Amino acid sequence: MKKPNTLTHALSRRIVVGAAAALALGALPAAPALAQSKTVLRISSPAVPDDWHAKMWTVFKDALEKSAPGEFDVQINLNASLFKQGAEPAAMARGNLELTTVSAADIAKIVPEFSIFTAGYVVRDPAQQQKIFNGPIGAEMFKTVSDKMDITVLSTCYLGTRQVNLREVRNVKTPADLKGVKLRMPGSKDWLFLGESLGATATPLAFGEVYLGLKAGTIDGQDNPLPTVKAAKFYEVTKQIVLTNHLVDGLFIAISNKSLAGMTPAQKQKVQAAAQAAAQYNNDNRRKEEAELVEFFKKEGLQVTTPDLDAFHKTVQAAYQNADYAKVWPKGLLERINATK
Image 1: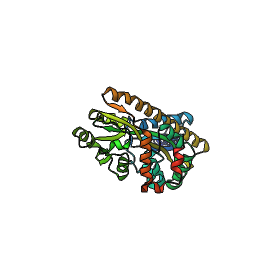
Image 2: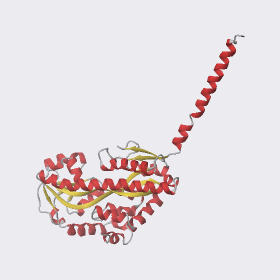
Image 3: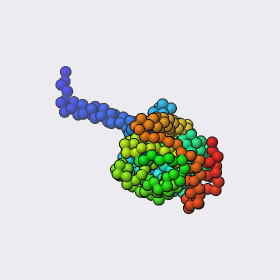
Image 4: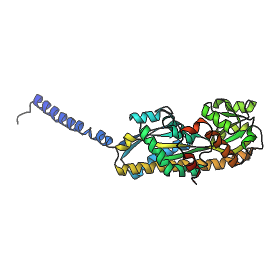
């Protein structure tokens, strides 16, 4: 038998190995092609991981994976790690971001009429908040937001209700009872106006200085939702919480119109449902936490009192209507909001 040529054998072996490698390499693009078939949904949020409106994004992701398995690649970015707080709407308009939560204040920068939802005593409670934004008023306002900001609001999240927290106990029934009280407010003119409308002497002070300010008596009180009062330990240097309920705050889960336009009708419905499930999770847990905190503060020795809310409501709304703030609000909108039960 003739012995095979060593060179020929080696060349043949290289050709076979090369062909096998080529086949293997040729198969590699299939994986990226499969990944590219998923709709990427990048989420940017300034929320810290332990907050309810951070945890709700996991609910959103899980809901989508259940209703549309393998169709979406949901990427959650917390702690403002992807975009700074307030920069998200512009990123969405450019197509650099798909999903985020936007505040009423952020929206009002582009849609001035939305500033009505940053005013005191416009929204009465979390239940009314949902009725307002899930009804005709919400549909009208969100259409304007879509037209002007190129984003679509999918659901409304309850962020908390701001209350007055005082260093010393006072008999507070009406705004007149807060006269002379140095009430710390965030430093912008909008916040200071709200503090003045409550009857107090609005005093700007950085959040990080509030604890020591209360302890030393340079301020007489501060306002924040109850979870913030606990987290910042303001209850250690105050003696009373007045449940004024003066601002029911919210966040809106929004998606870029560009991203939404690339989806099938079925996918749009699933994304909407996932956003509503996420908001419901946040809302239920936040309201439960607030209810439990009333008892927590009582156990810590604070007096928790409820004033004449009608008196506060009328006084504060009158202050806004007599100022420039109300000039950009659509005619009749405040009355429609007040009539929403």
